[in-house]
Image (cartoon, rainbow, N blue to C red):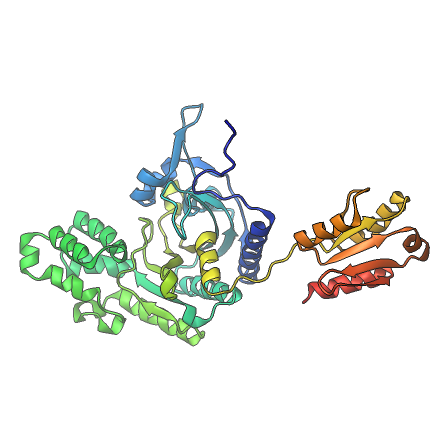
Length: 435
């Protein structure tokens, strides 16, 4: 029986046309991150399981990790996310690094979950992390970068919105406003995190079941349901309005508005699934009714570096995945026309193939990407090959061209050909690249 040609379930093969889109996404990621002064880092794809057991979502650790014992009987995991890894790295050199620390990476991560639209088992993501700033300046910076990334991909403000909440406010709601214990609070947080994926009646029933009879009698479940309808911090109950987290949120929204970010909104239901978030959290949502989903998000996670035995470091960051981003670009017709990187398909027509190869080498040295046709094939076949590959130009190098140092350049799109010097050919092709 023949072997399957399909990749592992939930993973992708990247044929050249697919890889071009990925390279485009990566180039925007790197460009925007480096504009903000962030430096690139990387780390092993395998990590000790214990670093995820400490603070990652229990759902991710228990149900979605590729975890196993290595031959040394060590529990290891293929990284399901990058934040614990970068926190480990910072902790390892806590005293040597210069703060604030601005780092980014573009790792691939793995989660064992059901592949579906916008979600695969393997994906790549941009990780942005800012260490060493305790004030709201950090949240402001990373949210501004998230906004600038969307703009760099061609998104208009009405195509997405940025939803913001505070885990400090969530804690105040759970403990002070609703009077829940730690177990109830954790359960309710996970329930709210899933509410948009549930039927409303099911959600209400599960909320009701979570409260004790005395809490239900005191109207706590109704208070929660009313709270989840609030769309602005101005609509919060008086008991919560004076909380420090509300003042911080108000200040953050004002700062973002002053910077021209008008599509940031308050969302009391925004939880973010990871246990390590400590304060402000945010998510960027696609507003397209056909793809109305979270694209990416992040927040503050001040306590993670400390878990590795190092002194506490203020930490804010986010991760932007390539699968959900590609879905967004496609649904909003923002995928550019990405052509092959090859500029010229060169065909040697004469016997002096060595001199023809020297000409091709000169073109490469002058900055062009040139593929060569195998010797001895019919010209018609070579033209079809170049067209199928989407290469814009063909170059014919025969005895006459070598003698005159004027080479025949065929524009396959315009279906015309002219003879030019090598310098002129380089100029024509480089001008074409700029279009």
